[in-house]
Length: 136
Image: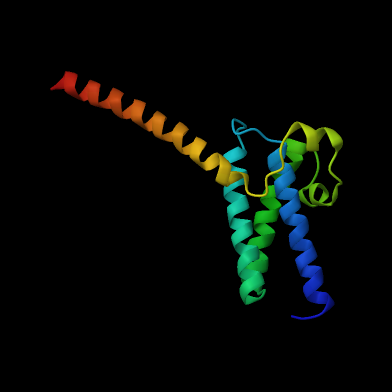
């Protein structure tokens, strides 16, 4: 794909990437949909990377539509607007000053999430081991 068609595709992807970043800026790690949004973000960014590297095809478009649909549902619930609208909006002053902008928030929060999950698993393991030892 060359010319204006390629530029239109890249522009659409930029809107998705910006919308994702703005959606995550409006969320906290403790939000119930945060992990789901991170998973969908990883899937969408991988899809976009593959399309940029190898070109678009029906399978990639179908997968992307499913991912964007799920993200739009979550964006409507969390931010009250669609993923595309988030990507097209100008940054509001309160948003830009109240939270730092993060293109890949899952990288910065990954360590924190792993600590949360590993401590939870560790506590469960300790309880299980204690309960098991009491039975023996």
